[in-house]
Image (cartoon, rainbow, N blue to C red; front, side):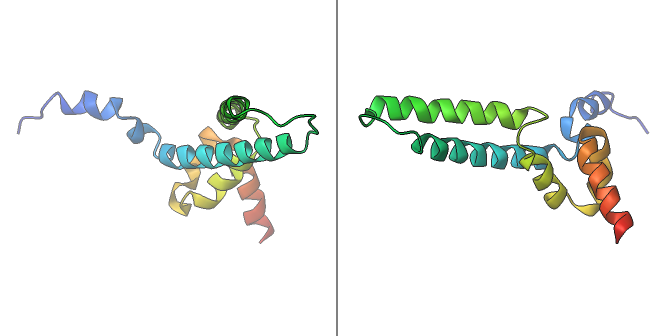
Amino acid sequence: MKVNSQIQPHFQSNPKATNPIKPFEEIAEGMEASFTSHMLSEMRKTIPKEAPDSSAMDYYNSMLDSERSQLMAKSDTGLGVKKIILDQIVPNHMKHYLQKEHPQVRQRMTKEMTNE
């Protein structure tokens, strides 16, 4: 039986093969970015202004909030929403992958399991 040599490199270059929780991380990161963007825009509304902003300034501020929230969601520190969401959405049979990627989530999960 002859094995095709092109299969092995393709398998190794597939990121899902090495990190099966990547789709869950992307979902959690998007949810944290969305939450953070909404929070920043609501915080901006509490600042007293002498005159209302123009539509251009509103658009600029929304883009600024969006970029800031994306950066915060991609960072390891962020608000911590991503870690909480990952703890909730990753299936139990895949939780061991969180130990490498997100040790804080795994550590908290281990504490919760021992307290039960």
